Length: 201
Image 1 (cartoon, one colour):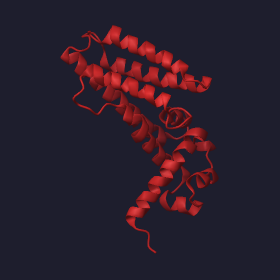
Image 2: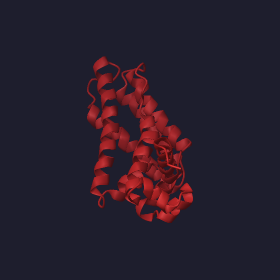
Image 3: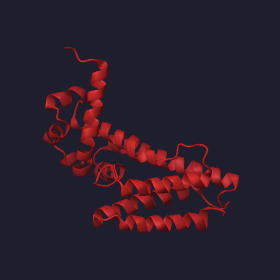
Image 4: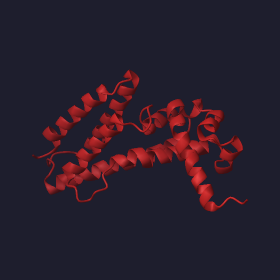
């Protein structure tokens, strides 16, 4: 029976979702096609029917991880004021660490670390995701500065970078130490920093 476009799209998405934890745990280089066969339940030919190569699948997984994990941490409720938007990013990161979708750390950071010097096309894809997160945070900071919710002397670009780097760095430390407490300690420091140095009240 001929495979329908709808079924093909569903199969492709299923392969992506079931492959995601494997890539995040073992990395791109450390993930074998046999691991993906076992994780997805599809034969190698079935996987290659939807993806030209392991790297092609890895990129699809990376996009999926960004959309379903990282981008979820960015506020989408336009009715929130700037402090609420900024805190929602912070608390969503805390929720991500407390109840992780994958047990092996941040997929964005894991992938960036691995492909930084080896896969330039992949690095550029990662760069576009990082820029989107930074620009979203920067826009919130600029909005808060303009509307008076945030202090007038802040530099939105530098503050966005500081917040993102602090959160992601704390996740790395927690991963290395195999416990979440280092992240929660940094989380408390960031929350205090926002209230003392960013918010006007």
